[in-house]
Image (tube, rainbow, N blue to C red):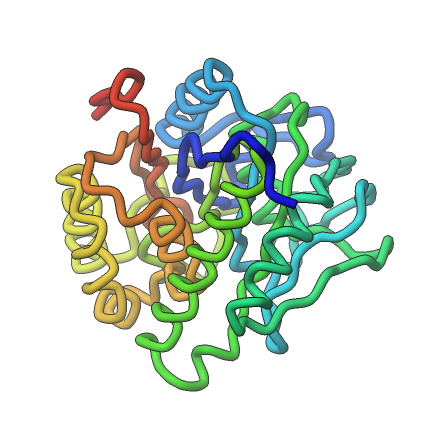
Amino acid sequence: MASEQKGQIVAGCLAPHPPHLVYADNPSQNEAYSEGGWETLRWGYQRLARKLKNIDYDAIVIFTPHWQTYIGTHFLGLPQFKSKSVDPVFPNLFRYNYDLTVDVKLSEAMHDEAAAQGIITKMMRNPDFRVDYGTITSCHLLNPEWDKPIVTISSNRNTHYYSPEVMVEQATALGRACAKAIEESGKRVVLVASHSLSHRHFVEESPLPEDMSREHIYNHSQYVWDMKIIEMMREGKSREVIDIMPEFTEQTIAETEGGGLIWMLGAMGFPEYSAEIYGYQSVIGTGNVVACWDPNDETREYVL
């Protein structure tokens, strides 16, 4: 039964998830220790986290490319997941002890609405399931207190067996389904697309990972593409961003190929207002931007 009060999406965040950012943050949950690093992104995250503290919301819904599924789109389906997440790529940096709460009712509502619209869906109810580092990194940096329940949505990669255009179509449809479920839930929700922009990266790691003298974008072409996408975001050209996404993905091996940004912008009705840009920086050669779409005219601000 639908809630008497309509739910709404109160913010949409593009939140990159390099595990280096948690490593550099030195939280008590992570076992590795650093001397800092990647401050431009971390400070941008801190400012966005302060903004979210001033927004009344009930849950975070996050789409992650590092929970890859090939038979449909999956949703977390238990009220609690507690374990250790070790990054398979950077286990030296990320060994995070997590204890997170899931809004199962909202998760099931989005699952059911997506299924009703013809999208193959499943609920993850295995208590031994290891939550991916994309979910943990983005949620930790946006809400380090972990005082809000989350819903994690997997990235269904079988759409790539067809074409990038099919991926855009499917991610948009999933976004619309999630938006409808949120509206009927009566809840106020923050959406999070957890990924970088350009994603070509170096294949060797600095002896000291946080040595910023070695940190730069992989190549100039990748940088130019990132700036083009960011400028379109600042100009409120969401639909144009989606239109150019297949070419951007191909040219820069962009992590947008997972569908998260398309899902989020589709759920928000392809905003025509400016995105708030909080910071851009490379991490091992990849391009990363922290950004937010605020549908409230009174609280939306021009950050960068």
